[in-house]
Length: 366
Image 1 (cartoon, rainbow, N blue to C red):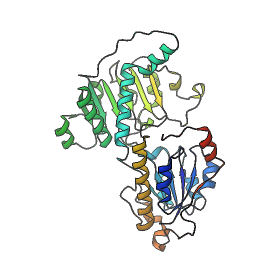
Image 2: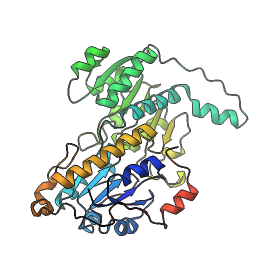
Image 3: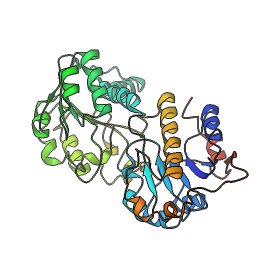
Image 4: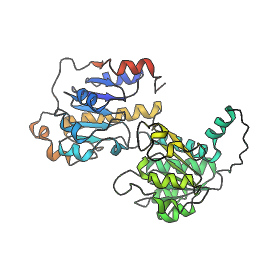
């Protein structure tokens, strides 16, 4: 299939470049630090956009990209990066890649859980600074893990916790999961009861209007004083000011998050929430990297490419998150999804951003 596409991403390995070339499309590859004006320029004339960076795709951006027909988010949590409702109004489909990175995110969740409970990062930093700290941790064995959102990732975390560490698992989910309950022996609870019972809480709920700030001051007050919270979903599931107060006052043990309310993060002194100033034994933060392994990147990119081809050729895909786009997609009714191009096999690099990243940033997929 022939189409023009923008792909914002960290430097790609040869296998990823080969997979793009194999589509027969023309890709412009850019880095993950495009400002709004750079993004607008890069989207000019593009029918598809794989969003693998931290760009904020707003109504203004979408309105200025008249050729754009599909935005494929390189992951699951698209809501913090692209206005899917605005895209629908402009006849642009938005897709994501649920399940493609489940194992990677689950493994990283467990890594953050272990770091929080055993204080690996904090102890390492203190030791390298010349100290010899003594910290008596607790085993995960026999502890209760509370999972909020028992989808594919949550179920994978539950399996690792139960079979690998001997933990007990309770969960909160919009729908009951009888297959998971039978296979793993987990129990479903309402969120307040889960927060009161769990030693470790792991957030895997999808971010949206119903889940924004589900861990607010009242919810955080239900946690045990030594409780650990791990959030590899979206930062906005936790109300940031309430989180800061609970951590600073020692009312909960530690919170570990993959991704922040502001990305990239500001200097600690400029952080409006004050969380970046907290010590590592209270607040751990990683740069939205839980999903990023060689295997998950390959699967996620393949899923994005399939979705783009499906949308452009048929007007639909099972991973479209804003199906209302079709009502405003005049290109569907005119049959002008994509146009053949003589140079369609080209994968191009624009030097102003991509070459700088290639020379200054280590490959994210080694």
